[in-house]
Amino acid sequence: MKNSIMLKSNIAKVFSVLGIVLIALGASAQNKTGLHILKKHPIKSSGGWDYVTVDAAEKKIYVSHGTQVNILSTATGDSIGVIPNTNGVHGIALVKSLGKGYTSNGRDNSCTVFDLKTNAEITKITVGTNPDAIFYDNFSKKVYAFNGRSSDATVIDPATDRVVATIPLGGKPETGVSDGKGKIFVNSETTNEVVVIDANTYKVINRYKINDGDEPSGLAIDRVTNRLFIGCGGNATMVVMDAGNGKNLAKFKIGDCDGVAFDPALKLAYSSNGDGNMSVIREVNADKFVFVENITTEKSARTIGIDLITHHLFLPAAQMEATLPTAENAHPRPHMVAGTFHVIEVGK
Image (cartoon, rainbow, N blue to C red):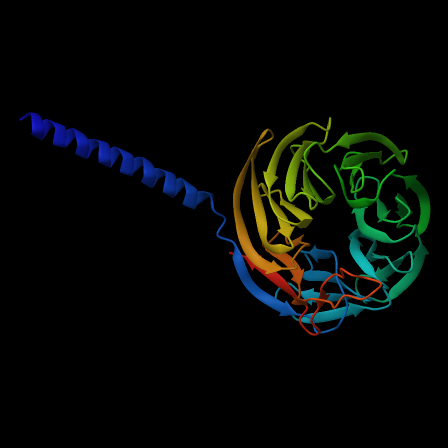
């Protein structure tokens, strides 16, 4: 009788533990995104790349690529246009209310203004040295180009295509975002800070220290909770920050990140990691964040764009191979294998 009771007790314990495990596994499966590589869209022209901008409403992807911008259809992946003569292009900003786009041309210190319907060049604007990231602030209705070598921001009025301000930043700027209420935030890669700019006065009003991040590059914002998602490639870390006071709220191990995107509908932040995956962080609420998963992409897929209608992600990539060392450069960077450039589409 005693042995029978003990047996029943042990069986009950086994089923109890098994139930807990199954519940945990079920919860884990539910937390996964289900995202994976859907397609790869080839772009055969030569040249390096940086940022990608998605116009979800018009079903267009603008891809920086060497001395031009390639435009692909999000519906088919087909090439639907090219914007030439953008020497060393890094980023693309869209001002849809005026029917114009802006590229940051790193090699000739300019921004190309182009027509969104015809892709034809309208004009070129001289900015700071080596413009890198660029974006449009819909609060101030200004375009911000962040200049890597001159460590400043050029502010352009798209209504006139004139420079209205140059803002010293005290460090090498990377990606910038807006809270939509009058503040601009930009990563300072060399000082490990987020620099805060008043969009009304064009003055730096704060500098937020990134405590556990090195070489911040990618940046995204949740405007509802006022949270910044900062991708730090120097130590493969994402830091979540309160945009109101600079408080560091959370940190996560990711990869060699250069780009970050945020989906406000799904409350998911994505970091594109050049070592071959995309990290996903879920915003549970304004003060709680959890690591979800790493999704396999490709090595070199280090920047990212998001379609906020389909919730698909787009990551430029190419096959890379070692570059032979020379007397002048003993440790050269790998170079792209000709003809292998493409855009990875990730979705469900």
